[in-house]
Figure 1 (cartoon, rainbow, N blue to C red):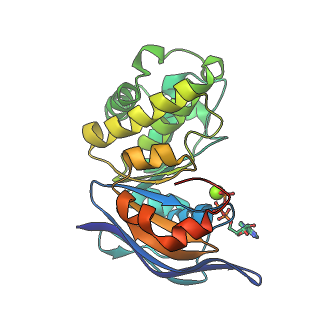
Figure 2: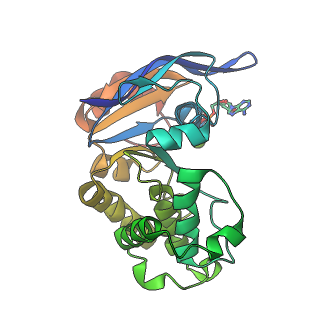
Length: 252
Ligand SMILES: Nc1ncnc2c1ncn2[C@@H]1O[C@H](COP(=O)(O)OP(=O)(O)OP(=O)(O)O)[C@@H](O)[C@H]1O
Ligand SMILES: [Mg+2]
């Protein structure tokens, strides 16, 4: 069953059509990848789904509801969450506080940090926080200041922050960017585990073909804003258009 569906989704920046009539579906429970050369429109597509950008045309449907043009906060409440590459962590707060604040914000909108210090009554928030920290294997680091985590653990914390709203669909835009090979391998393993333990549907943008072919059930290929292939890793690999788009670039 399809959880997310776009129909003719289009985003123009002035004369540039960054996302050009993209129609695709994400099924419940699958790991769906979006690939394509630099500037293909991958991030713009993701941002039109989260509501960070308003589409110029087309629709986004989630769980059978039209969510086109909703604000980022509204799409979070609908069940969509995005793991941000930067700036989502409060470095001076502990690991646990970072996830708690995200869990609360998803329910109540933004609020002051002082409010967090009077949190003792929020059992549900504590439970969610524990579960999400456990799912990214940071439960033992709950009281550590976020700033002091090694890079790979910071990225895991960002994923826990994204999970704090208990999404059905997790969007990830190049989650392994800047990671060492070891950290990349650990993150890939984590993504695969998350899908099992949390029953998540994942939409992931990733440059590393090896990773994509390892984790994706289906791959959407964009080039200059348009869909040039959509199918299983095997189908995409055989597509001539895909091979041309990547000519001289990434080897499939
Ligand atoms: N806010 C913006 N204003 C104007 N043009 C933009 C904006 N955001 C993206 N673009 C342009 O839209 C096109 C698609 O950009 P986008 O960031 O979606 O590509 P991408 O596939 O994510 O690329 P990358 O692999 O480099 O992350 C590019 O030509 C980019 O310069
Ligand atoms: Mg991008």
